[in-house]
Length: 76
Image 1 (cartoon, rainbow, N blue to C red):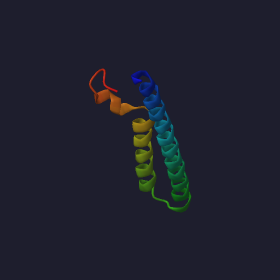
Image 2: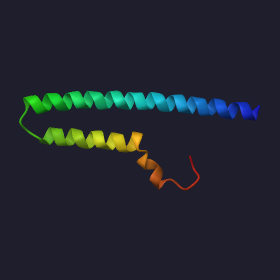
Image 3: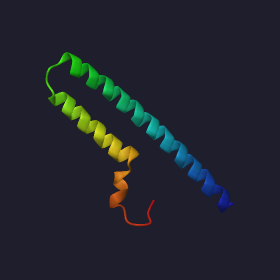
Image 4: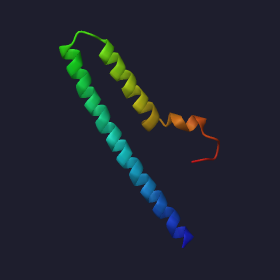
């Protein structure tokens, strides 16, 4: 019975990771749209810089898994 629970839990974890990745991708797409609008309608580059920093943080955390660098070895 324990052998059946582990693959099921892994499958749920994997599907939740896909949902999280899809949500982050949609947020990145929305931020890109906002970035384009601000770039074409406002002359200030400050907002563009702030949005680009936010987008890079999202990519580093969710897609490059940088948070794993500070975890102890062997933990998931």
